[in-house]
Image 1: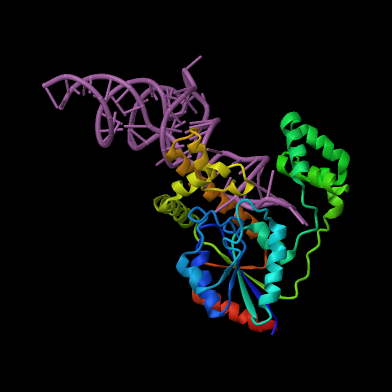
Image 2: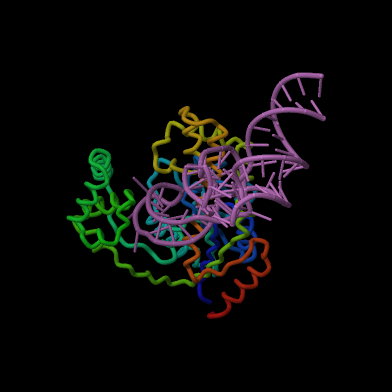
Length: 303
RNA sequence: GGUGCCAUAGCUCAGUUGGUAGAGCAAUGGACUGAAAAUCCAUGUGUCCCCGGUUCGAUUCCAGGUGGCACCA
């Protein structure tokens, strides 16, 4: 039988976690996470990590596996997840991957190109130049270093321009020459289940979830991490807004309102990314039986 | 009960000396290759409270009604 990776994806707050437990138990398998924030053990309430009970019921991987001080990226996600799957598929036919981080999912399913990790020195150098001379200077630099990518990139997006320049400097090659645009072959089958619900309903759930997080101690959790606010891992919805409040820039109510709005925006961006993936079969989270039936039929299909 | 003010987008409001309207926020669509819960781009959705009157034409002016707020009883 072909080994199968079941991917359960969808926007934040849609209800992936609860369903994932049922699916994992149905196939008597474990869960690997594709969530760029739940990997960090210092964050619990604000990232809506699965409940203790759920973690006990089904073994999870890449939940709280790293510290906010660690470097983690979609490349690590791809490498580590593939290694885990290789190991798990020795005695399992199915594995379940759950999470909403678009690029992480993409990295595992399709792979990403080999690009050098940017050294802190280069990152600082390029970011400083951006601060001092502005976006236009970096655009001009990119035009010199990689005229091909210069034509493709969204020039208004400073992060993209900065990163392209960094890669060129780091590798000594044009960034575009490292981008193969090829999908990597996997030696396992992939079935993608997308969860979605009515937009108003989704936003309602998101808003309510934020209120619950606050009740459960999100403010205290964020306060304890305030000193690490400059870490990239702390550039996270549910924390960065509270940091603004701690700095005295906005009221507590305003920061909570912003957490809700930013979560909604994130959900919208996730849907926008997922929509173009034709391999995703979409369901409402309540359609548990339909989902299991669909998975069963797909697993059998090519076997 | 009386007087005054207000009623325009999902919300807060601006505006039209009479030619069917626009800001902020919210919202919507999109992009995305090692920071991605990041970052960037685009988009105005409307019985201008209701009913009459004046007018070629009323969201705008006038009368009445309804609702809200304030003050006086």
